[in-house]
Length: 370
Length: 224
Image (tube, rainbow over all chains, first blue to last red):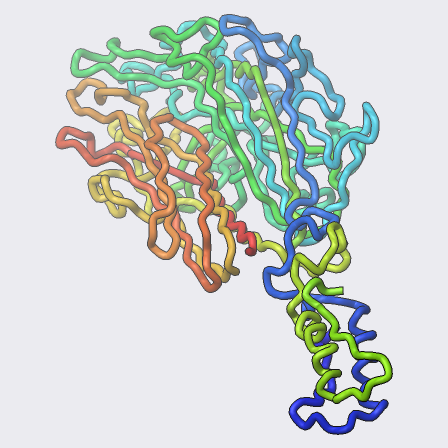
């Protein structure tokens, strides 16, 4: 509603006729309809005047409820294998199923569960019943903030002789590859397909058919297929860096990097004077071969919605072992997923990441002007 | 009716001066013409459909921020004299090169300008980072010291420091830095900076001290 313009009689203070007076009263009467921002003073309102939250559409958080005492061996369901596996017979020692894993151990026993609302599979918009999430129809312009935290309990290499993982940077007599710039990555995926939150329907936010963002996201497992059985490998040398993920090309700001091993070289005394250790071992405690106990690793990402979709669930995943590499041809820095196990002739790294607590939360900010 | 509207009674049967009519409705007009405030509106009176988008806040997202590839240099310890068997090349910032320049000073990771309304500005920066501590104390077969290094992040608004993070020594990690400050109306520049500790005389010059990638800067302007 616009401003109310009244016939003013001051300063003439002459004879007012009925038409002028009625016109004023009609203007006043009309002003009681359709009040809008022209009628309300700047900063004139406070939150209690709105019957909705002006900032957030929905916010929620859940954790997996798996809390154990230090020294505990985690349930096998809470031990997430790397893509590489010394037990695999093929040359590359990889198993496609290990490209990524849902972080789905849950409850006091840490038992795997695929049900939405358990593990790190959080229902969006709350739960409709024990099996189904309500879902929220995302509007173009909404912004999703997803945040998470995982407690990396232990990294357990396949080979207990840690010196087998030594790289020539620590020990010049070794023929192994570098162990020290490897991490396992935790990241979220999204389900816009079913309220049950089926694992088959989780994709990244930029997925062409199921996604809701026009951005391109890179996930750790991208670019490694086909694997196993003599298929493609991620060895940057042998593949011409085809499987390298250049950081500049796609979003990787939804990755949380969890370091797994480190090494310490000796001084001039020689190559045998070194230390190799895992980054965390809350099962056996800190030692000469374990830097410390558990590591709590956090991550987050913000994503703008550019396609209207109903979002049902969000879930965390953990990747295989990720390394850094610079492509000298394209002059781009990036990462790749390791597919060489330590027993491979070229060296490599392998093992399982034990995860205790894991939590995930999200905030959907109300849409902006678009 | 507006809380501030006090009507002027006109005595029944009397002759009214037209000026009295002004007084009777003038205060109402003052209130309705942009003077309404929290005293005039009931609780829960305004629904979502009555509001335009972006009426309460704005969010600016700057994604996929990475260290510029042309600022990164190879870790010579990695590639010479014996290349890593798998050819993995660590590139990043070295002490001898720009913008590190022996460390101690802040270099710019990103700088973004955005129009803002008066209110609060929540700034969030996160990225992944690597400090190559593949030797913790000495370069193998030498007395060259190469560790321990760290990185610190800093956030500035229009050149003023509003946040400085702690030094982080983790080999590889993802770090999150947030702060909220009052902000005035207008265009403001938010910049993110990093620094590594000062170089020691016996620090190895070939090592990469820091590499970072996967950054995201988010500016949430909550209007007053």
